Image 1 (cartoon, rainbow, N blue to C red):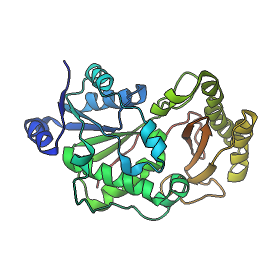
Image 2 (spheres, one colour):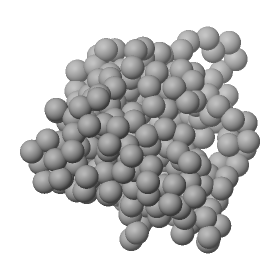
Image 3 (cartoon, rainbow, N blue to C red):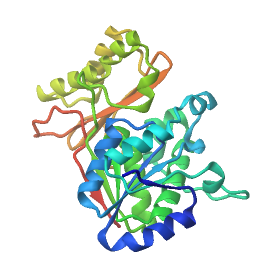
Image 4 (cartoon, rainbow, N blue to C red):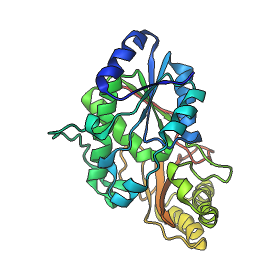
Length: 298
């Protein structure tokens, strides 16, 4: 059965009111659904009586107008996929519904959480946009659990901090990065890669695997780990925007990996900017590029 589509917060809350006793699971997206999104929806379906999917291309988190304009809008196809995943309700608001006339409030998470990695490249305003829209969506849906993918590791850390600081009563559930057969992290932007560019993009997961292999040999120096990543990328003709090793929780830079660390990268392949990461844990024999599922509740 096709999920019900609602466009306003007031209708959303009215429709959800009778369903809250059995638990509400929520997956926020910008649409253009792929297997990564569907894996989150399936997880939500298995743990909740009602599943809500949001589709909203949030203009405040795009630094480049061209990137916003190029972002795919495929609502009809998304709703069909949502139906197959067992979604009950699709919240697809307009920009005016989310940011009405006179809107003047920004949610901002400070410090390294929003100023390193993506924040250093895209600017603080990117995560201000993310935190603000996620806060609004969580307050609109009021779910018991909200599901995020580990590919956007920094976003997950920012959202966890925001939820804890503001006391929003929701479990933040992180699921492993969904990957193609060659290891490339699934992303809505991947559809913009040409066949040749798609082949080149496979160097991204290879580079992370090279770092994992280097780490498994006992290397803990972040510069040597980054060098292993860069060697694979450079061999494919790619020049990364950054390759950084940071504390997996605080996102503070690390020179030596003495406790769980996030090794993250960003690189452009043709017109597409790709991000990916791996968590390195001393003493753990884990060479799969993912963040283990975690929950955070205030």
